[in-house]
Image 1 (cartoon, rainbow, N blue to C red):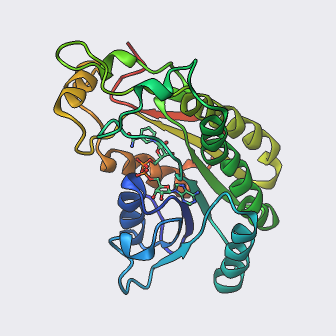
Image 2 (cartoon, rainbow, N blue to C red):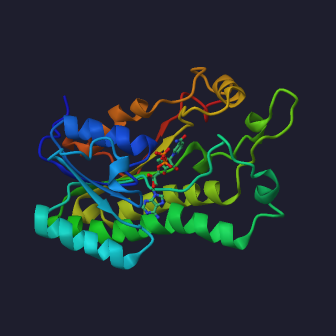
Length: 263
Ligand SMILES: NC(=O)c1ccc[n+]([C@@H]2O[C@H](COP(=O)([O-])OP(=O)(O)OC[C@H]3O[C@@H](n4cnc5c(N)ncnc54)[C@H](O)[C@@H]3O)[C@@H](O)[C@H]2O)c1
């Protein structure tokens, strides 16, 4: 189907839930994948002796560390075909007691700044650092990750237990940052069109990951397809955007949410 062989693909946050699945898929299709993640290398299931997977431990908020990664990549691979920006911080509704601190009136400037930094500003920095290689090549594809919450406000009712008591509260900064990622994607697509760099965004819905049963139930009922997403639900769209079969697609926000934002 899509031709992905020998593509050099950089994935920020590649050791996370979605990143592990995507890197496995792209390596399977003959790509060389370079994962940038703050976590230790051992936490990636492909990192053991896979010659198509490179792991750089890197804090994407640290400009010096990004510069070192850029130097390494140019020296070793000479090019980057695709940049996938997955890295983010987001409290999961698994075991977090965040209700009081995440209410708008209580939400601290410190927490706000941390979220905006990692979830939005780092996307700007990653695109600047690695997109400039693509601009010189006059070719590239950048795939940013937003969320349904970049388009619609969080539905806080899915975080209520059977007795209608909240067990989690989505903070105000995450949706704000994710909305910014969509707008930034459009800006950059327009700015770098003449450099033949395509910039697109993917907005997934919630992915199932051992959350509380009540949460999975509440969430699933709220979608058209009556289930949460799975990491491999994103493989198709990723393969398309990484390949030249999407050569006329740029500036879009592709929604993969089982219909959450439709109803
Ligand atoms: N999982 C979902 O339900 C869901 C839904 C909608 C959107 N998304 C978006 O998809 C993307 C991937 O989500 P995920 O579920 O795989 O998240 P995840 O938390 O499993 O993975 C994120 C990765 O980013 C890394 N990271 C965080 N801060 C970093 C830093 N400063 N430097 C380098 N790496 C850093 C983490 O170590 C982690 O491996 C995110 O942008 C997220 O907002 C996820």
